[in-house]
Image (tube, rainbow over all chains, first blue to last red):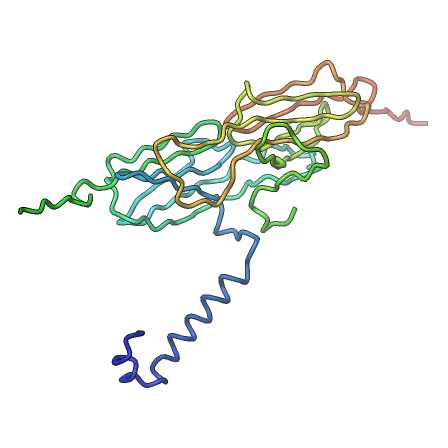
Length: 146
Length: 130
């Protein structure tokens, strides 16, 4: 786009949709600064090593059987169903701040993962997902012959 | 707390702590049954050894120590939440039977049962027909 020869060939009108797109993206970015939306739950941290990434997230009080992790291509989907509402009829909440709702979140992974070797561990309310990189996808060192 | 506010809230206490970590306000649900007040607090990262419940006069303090969560051989490349300790205090009324408070921790959730004192339990009063 910044190549001058190409730029000159392009009419300004051609780039209008692109600029509109850019404007929309920027508006979206700044419209919710400082507060997460429902889509951002649960919050994640991502850790990286040469051949794998680890995704951690805080999901207190879940039943591990009700957390769903699936990988399609390079998209990781994390979803879960709500914790049971513990109160019985006739009892009232004096304060209700915890999350009880269902959630679903998708992540774009930077590489293809070996779906057979994905490991997930849930302890103390923290979920760890280890995603090993596909062997064939690993960067290969190329030897230079002199 | 608003519906959209899903991130952890950091504690803003006047006094500083000795341990140099951030502290967060755990989210709690409190509800009342006939016999007790039940307090449920989300404290991911704590277990029964690292959580502390203290009752002094009528101030109930719950706190939890969390390991920093760093993974030794990995580097953090993207972060949406921070790890830190938890602390929150509540004022209790005198209606609680202090001797019988029960606490359990399961999957990062603290559950406190605060039984009501015998004298304040609701009593059904029968009305005699005249």
